[in-house]
Image (tube, rainbow over all chains, first blue to last red; front, side, top):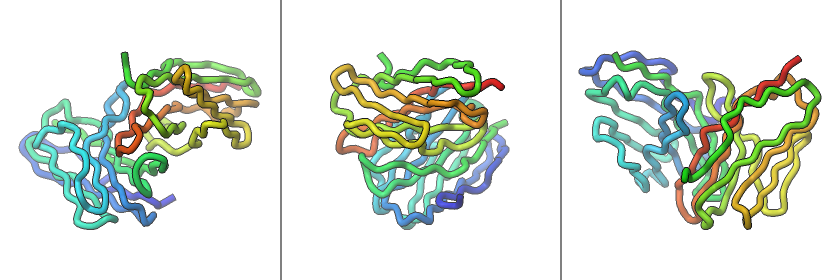
Length: 113
Length: 110
């Protein structure tokens, strides 16, 4: 199943590094999301984009910077992260808001050392 | 009170058993409801949407009780491959805000 792809699948970075996560959806959806999943915690919504416009920023620290150049691509730029930012970062898309199901990418497992 | 609450389990059941999970939500304005399954170290995958009238997909049945603010998932004739974590997801009406529960872990034993 390749509806939503994410790269890289695994990433180890130091606290002073800058890296980017990439997400691409091939479903023709209008909305894209970034989630963080830490151990034993529910998925936390980070950012939402609809038609390339950011509609939600869930009080995420500025060391996470999203970018949505078009409705098919979504990036998450990372810089000066902390060890507690280590988690699984999941990208999702949906046709639109509300009644529509979300489809997830395989995630990027991030470790900050 | 958490916005979406699930019993974390684990629920250990033998093959062929019937098992049911509940999920409660706090926001009465919630409009859309979903069940996802998540295997270890994998992404959540949609299992089924939950409709007001209830819906069934093979061995899986989902129900919504708006008065008591909970949704349920019933799995009949459990298979080993059903072992996973089942996530309850609730959407606030008119928003992009999907609230996830922490999940209920199911282990089906041979």
